[in-house]
Amino acid sequence: MENSFDLAISNFFKEIILELGVNGKYAELLTVVSGFFLFFIAIGVFFVIKKEYRVLGLVLIIAGLLTFVINDLTLKKIFIRERPFQYYGLDAPGFYIYSNSFPSGHSALSSAGAFSFLFYYLFLNKRKSITLMIYSIISFCICFAVMISRMALLHHYFTDCLVGLLEGSLIALLTNYVALIIVRKIEKKKNIQIEL
Image (cartoon, rainbow, N blue to C red; front, side):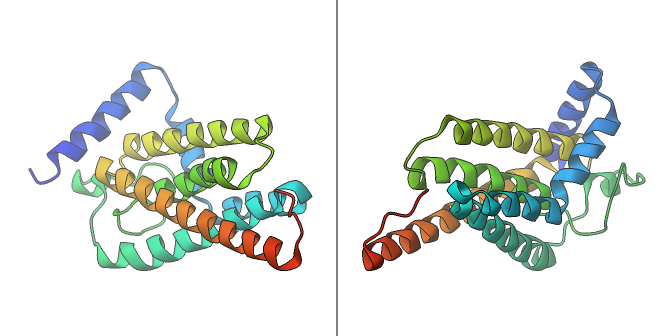
């Protein structure tokens, strides 16, 4: 069986969710909201409006756009892989828009957000605010919950989610690095200190 490792992990998470008595509707709701690209952009806009987190907001928006372009418009077109529920010949559980399985866009998008918060906190935020650390912790909890729900609903294999996680983290690292370079150049050129 080609995907036996991936299917075993997906079934493992599905069994844990059933054991805990978690309703599949919660997993479906989490997966719908987290994968909704405009929701991610709205979070970025929220932070752009807050002056002290404006750069973070721009980082989130750019990371979200890059994730969508790289993952959904490029990689999913190159790597054509059926989803686990298709492999089993099942109907799509929960909300589903047809696209290929590899890599997981939900995992990529949620990890781009989580790692954007983390990298911003570590490298760009001069005040090291507790609030930002809490946002980062919450976003990682959401990220892992999204990955587990995607596997438990048989929308993705483990490797889809793992590659999505790596993709999102690299995109977050890139966008934060570019933001750091731009902020430093502006500060040096204008001899000012940008509030981060």
